[in-house]
Length: 155
Image (tube, rainbow, N blue to C red; front, side):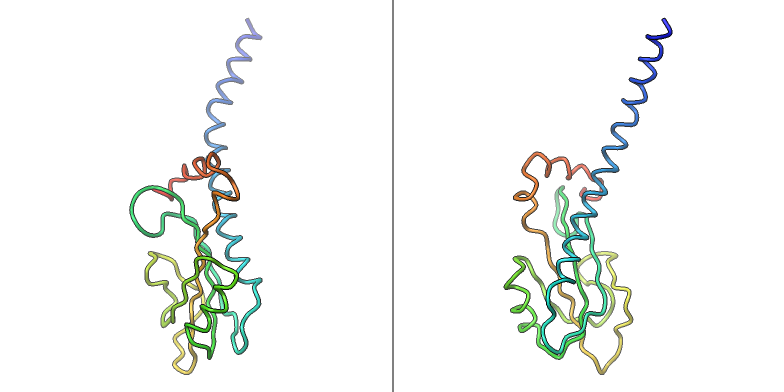
C-alpha cells in the first residue's frame, strides 16, 4: 500500500510540475530566439560613419491580429548615412529589415518597446534598424514552432 501511495504522489507531482516546467522552457526558448536576432545585428559590421548606441529584443505578438509568436531584434545607431544606405547595408545579410529615423527612444509601431538611450540631441541623427525573424520554421520545424506558440505573449 505504501508503494502505491508513493507512486501516486510522484505521479501527481509530475502531472502538476510538467506543464509549468514546459511553459517556462517555452518562454525561455522564445526569449533566446529574440536575443539571438539582437546579437546577430550587433555582431554585424557597422557601416562607415555609424556608431552603435543601444539594442533591444522582444518575443511576443508584436503586430497584426491572431495568435503566434513574433521575434524582433533592433539596434539604435547614430549615423550620417541615409535610411536607404543603412537599409542597403543590412539587407544584404538580413531578410526582414526595417530602418527608420528615431526621434524618441520608443519604437513607434510596437507598444512598450523602448531603447534605453537618450536620443533627443538635435545635432545627431539616430536610426532604428529592426530585424524580424523569418526562418523559425526552417530552424525548428513545424512541430516545435507550434509548441513555441503556446507562450501567452503570442496571444
